[in-house]
Amino acid sequence: MTMNVVDKLIENTIRTKNPSVIGLDPDIGKIPACYKNHAKSNHPFEAVANVIYAFNRDVIDTVADLIPGVKPQMAFYEKYGSYGVAAFEKTVAYAKSKGLIVIEDAKRNDIGNTARAYADGHLGCVELLDGSCAPSFDADFLTVTPFLGSESLHPFIDVCVKNSKGIFVLVKTSNTSSGEIQDVVTSDKMTISQSVAKYVSEQGDTFTGEHGYSAIGAVVGATYPEEAVSLRKLMPKSYFLVPGYGAQGGGAKDITPCFNEDGLGAVVNSSRGILYTHMNNEEREQCTRQEYLLSVKNAAMQMREDIYSALKREYRKMIY
View 1: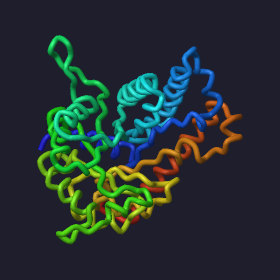
View 2: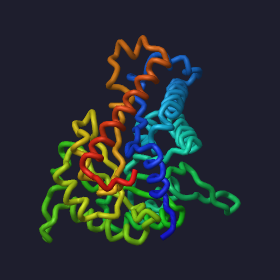
View 3: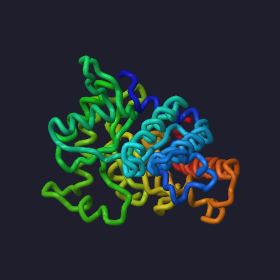
């Protein structure tokens, strides 16, 4: 076995005693007013992008020693066009400079050369005019959708192996309508989610790291703990990205089936619960940066304590 990107995630998790990541989903309507003074531009989109990056940078500085990684959701950046994407790129680079793992939540996919282009741009290297290659977005992980079939996933897996990166394949998402498709039973008596999980496990066996976990992982929502039990059995070596904690209704007890007895195997994401829900609109209008960032730190520490305590109660063989 050789070291892969999951090993880096695991080492960060052990160091911080925290299997959770913070979703960097900048909502300009909820970002505290004290950040609006960074909006120094004549172009309205660039002004927003400046605020987003200043906000992200402060959040990263506040939690960098508490968490193993961050999960920026590309939609919150892309909607501001090239200026928003530039803020995303700077956010990724800054997070990595602080030693954090970056999980890009963009849910990309296609087939053939288009899938390869997505994979190269987000995880690998892109060709330059002189024939050389350079990384573009350079995230550590990317979320991808599997519903175009195996030919759409192979280009991402190839790039992961070549560049020591990882993907999280959508298997069982946290939203309430996910069952309309993901719970449909196929001709082999498995749900769609279970069929995708089987594929993820088979592919993941070819890319395990020093800790025995694969960089070909799965998105499994915290809001469906019973399904997580069966999916964990189907994907024993796959790392899980677990959305749905906190604001979407998933609690610390709900996420424990996503883990293995060593306390590894998953990272839990919270976005709104860390960035916004601990303050109301009036408080966000009036708070100072120091007050806001202290509330972010407290929310991150509380999430760490809740999840770590739940895992300790459930798994006596945790290695951290």
